[in-house]
Length: 81
Image (cartoon, rainbow, N blue to C red):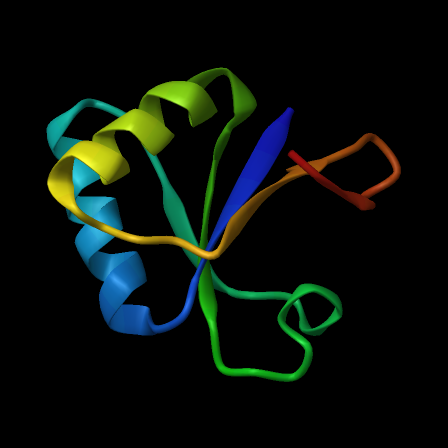
């Protein structure tokens, strides 16, 4: 199952992807879905949900802020974590 970590800009998402890669957590950058961004210009990282807690700790430790995190369920719907 996949999760999304939302960021306010591409720069934050790119920085987070670098930090996560250094910790051997794979991520894939996408535009934040409009249904989650409210029409803004945010970017998100898609990661495996099993890596979410470790990713949040790494981002906090390295000072990379994010907006929120969502789980993508089997029907493709987003659930706040």
